[in-house]
Image (tube, rainbow over all chains, first blue to last red; front, side, top):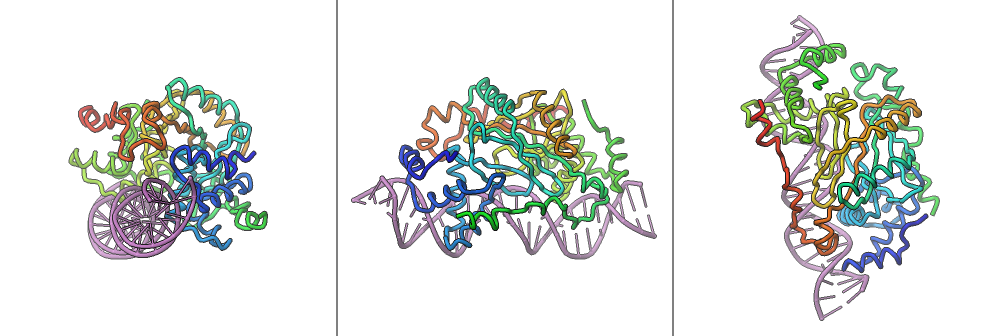
Length: 177
Length: 177
DNA sequence: TTAAGTGCAAAAGTTTTGCACCAAG
DNA sequence: CTTGGTGCAAAACTTTTGCACTTAA
């Protein structure tokens, strides 16, 4: 399930002339223990660590997220919030895709192996090595439609769905450790 | 091929209590005449219009792009450049997906109807109305791999692929009108 | 020992917003 | 007329970077 242990991450970093630092190990650990369906922005990760008493600078967070995404260890998600989110880049059968409401940003995961296969085939056909493959489905949720989206929706309206399971890692993740 | 005429855009805007302005019409027109495979960032669009002697403020550009994306008229693409790109949101059979090299940002389009179908089915199953559905495949191109990506690649290296057909709209689009 | 990594603060880049004026319906 | 839209400039955010210091290998 866990793709990388601290040891294998170290091996892979060293092979590229890079180093395993306590910060990188901590960040890997956070993603490995993130409940399913969660993904963190740089700021989320920074705050989560702060709450735990681990003070890793935002610069390092950004540098590490980028590094790990380029290594193929993390997936960079562009859902609808205006900033990137990250999660472990897990292979089949954990690989999944996202539905996002463009009004309330509520996100739902789903799996579909044939899409993953199409992605691989397509990359191969183009002579490129696939690192990640994500289907993002932009939608409008029925709550927003019912309230008259797009014209009649109050600008400050927030979708009830957005709160159904918002930031579960906020509580449970630290409790889980 | 063109999904909206100025008249149908006007009708749809008015239905929502909004207005058709010369700026909106101009922007719609640009996207309708954009050669296939091109997509514009806010800045791209701003500059393209400037070169044509049409001065539409960046604020208006941003507001219009967001509006049209929320109407489902434009697709918002998050390729790898750190800012959004837009293109017409065309239905089957023009609907397509993207391969992106995370090293050089070179983008390749491809079509796959079964993915579009999967997206529709998935949205329906979740009780959501689909607006857009994009498969983004993150890859590494062989040029980068050959040069020792990721560790050995000079930080200022730029992939030859990135220049193969960069910004064709830069010349041809204005010529086409 | 030495090159890579970190933290801090400053900078850069993208997108949003307040407000006065303009214009579509 | 009335309300929405535009342009401008300022602000807000996210992400990157320069530099001195630290540390993994």
